[in-house]
Length: 411
Image (cartoon, rainbow, N blue to C red; front, side, top):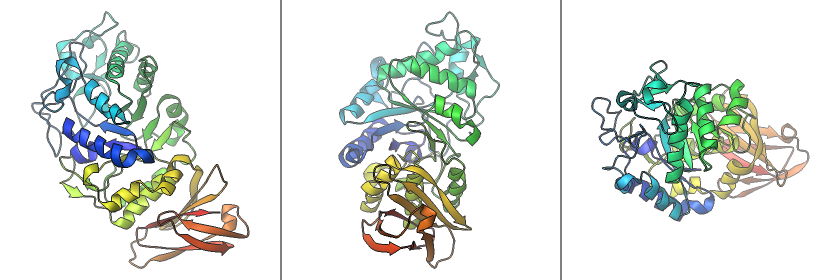
């Protein structure tokens, strides 16, 4: 559970903005389990832009070993070779953890300069290929697994990140690239610091789940997820295909939560409040909770209103996300959908009801208790409102708004 700068700031976030979001999280969210502050893409470019990437004349910041370092005009505490150490220390001082985004591979500029590789007699030009270069950002070349110096380069960047105090690394353009995933995994295992590895941008298949569980902590189940209803509706089928394939510490990742104030200087979209209606926001949080997707908040935290704060600090809902087991789709009848999960401590049932239809009229969705392996009479609590709805015998019926959701404990 954390915050990532991507939805707000794309490749342009600066140190003060990171600190402001960390301060908000420490004050308002840490006690609910939120803990990661992640600087997303291109923190090493001093002149990037909103609405895309500056690939015409990017000013890179790089060390003598071909490893990117933070752009000083955006992250002044990185001066004198400190990298992200000072910013990580600040985040840690707030009781939180600090992460960064990287692209897989070795920088093109490092290859052009033929920089040496620490721990090896080889240089950058000995380990790269232009084949498989990222199609949407040309900062990097592919590293050829098995070449002398290839593993050593990955080792060197993660040793650098460990020295900065990094707790989380999101590696982009890595989905489906098993050889590079294995190099990253080995580098983390040998860097001397526990680091969560998150890979993106999607494209991994459920049949690769065992490999993913053995090598990464989070893997994206879709391409970038933004604040429109069709993309949210698509999540039902995507996440349903991954049911049961996560394990503690290793999770299919539905991507970020594009909530509240986003697009401030983003790679995509104008500055705006999230395009999701309130009912759609309940749907997003309910689905990601019962599926147990990681929560990475994409909005500018200091801009949150009381409604958004209530969405991400509801203890009952967060408990479903953090601790429930056996989450699965119970049924789907066209656009009427039900999911269920169990509370491992009490044996209580969680039930999520979704109305994905476009009809303006709220719909009634009924679930028989025997579908939940329950008999007799049970109490139902609405987890979003905290209200006990009463005792029900044989079944429970919820009335759900257009594009909305309900989340309940049955005991």
